Structure formats: structure tokens, C-alpha cells
Length: 263
Image 1 (cartoon, one colour):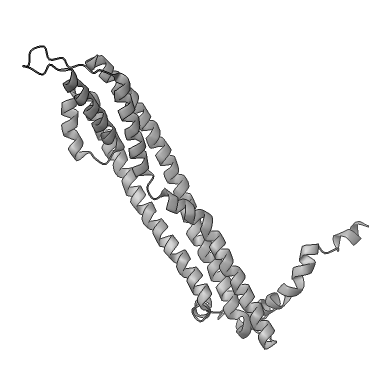
Image 2 (cartoon, one colour):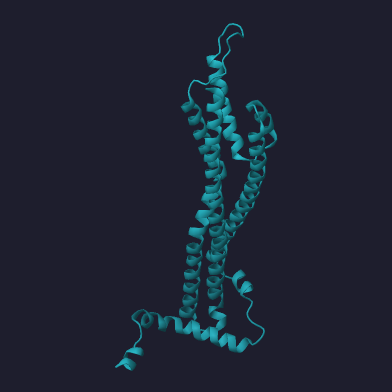
């Protein structure tokens, strides 16, 4: 009984086996007849139809755009880390915010500079609003609302996070869409191969090779575009989350110094 069940063909296999048999037999025959010379798949693809070339062109553009974004993000996060460490060192050693403000001109690569400028501008506005309009006597370096300062810093976090996240949507789109675009090219290539078999009545390697070349190259192109984009999206997403945590910590540190010096 067990032996009888083991030889039973799966329904899906039973449907597609007759269709795939000519292609598989052709590939086997090609492998036996070409010997060590092989088949120039690239040349076959170059002589394939326009649909396959359009699909490959779309995948190539997505891949180039993704690599451009990843190189740019790598430089951006590297500079952010370098400038951020230098800025925090200056921020913690300086006794006055005005000294830190001067240093921000050469350390603009870190989002912490944007946060500091936003908080400093809000403090400066509140301090000037509380100072007497006539003369310098009685000038008070106090802030009216710590909540207002914190709101300004929180808004700055959103702005700086949006700058760091620029280009991430392209990586996500490439990672999710490229395999399906490549799959479309694969299916189209197989359809071309079967159409050629039906039109010529022959399953020779010369008849089906262009269609199979379309399928193979577009499948590989889809994966080649999607895999680096997915890895890059996960990597830079982690870096972005770390930057958000760093910005949140800086807000707390900034608010502590503001409360100590301006209240």
C-alpha cells in the first residue's frame, strides 16, 4: 500500500509535467551536445524580444538607483557619526550655548546640530521676550516655557529623521517589487519558448533558447536588484533607529541644561 502511494503523482505535477517535459528534454540535449563549449546565454538574450529587454532595463535602473542610494546613505551616516561624536564633545565641555553655536558651522553633518539650533533659537526668542525693552538694567536670562523648548526640539527630530530617511522608500520598493518584475520576465520567456515550440513544431535548442534565455536572465536580474536593496534597507533602517535614539537622548540632555541655566 505504501509503495503504491509513493508512486502516485501530485496533481500539480501531473498538470505541468507534460508542458515542461519538452523544455527539460531540450536543456538536457543541449547539455549533452554542447560539451565543454556551453551556450552563450547573453548573446541569446540580446537577440530576444523587446519585452524581455524592457523588463531587464527596468531592473537595471532599479538596481543602479538602489546602489546610488546605498552609497549616499553610507557616506551620510558615516559623516553623521563622526560629526556627532565631535559635536557632543564640544557640547558637554562648553559652558555657554553661544560657544556651541559657533562650533555647529563645521559639524553640520550630524542631526544633533539641527536639534541644537532649533532649541537654541527657541531659547533666544524666549529670553529676548522677557528682557525689558528700555535699557539693559534688569535683564533676565530666563525662559518662559520649558515645554515650548521641548516642542521645538521634538519638531526638529521629525525634520532631521526625514532627512536621514530620504531614499529609504526606493530601497523598500526595489526589494519588494524587483522579484515580481523578474518573475514577469521569467513567465514571459517561458511563454515565448512554448509559443515557438507551437509555431515550429520543434523543441530543438535553437527554437527555445531565446525564450529560456529571457527567463533565466530576468530571474537573475530580479534577484540581483532585490537582494542588495533588502540588505541595504535593513542595515540603514537599523542605523536610522539608532540615530532616533541618539536624538531623543540629546533632547533630554539639552532640556536638563536649559532647566539648570535658564529657570
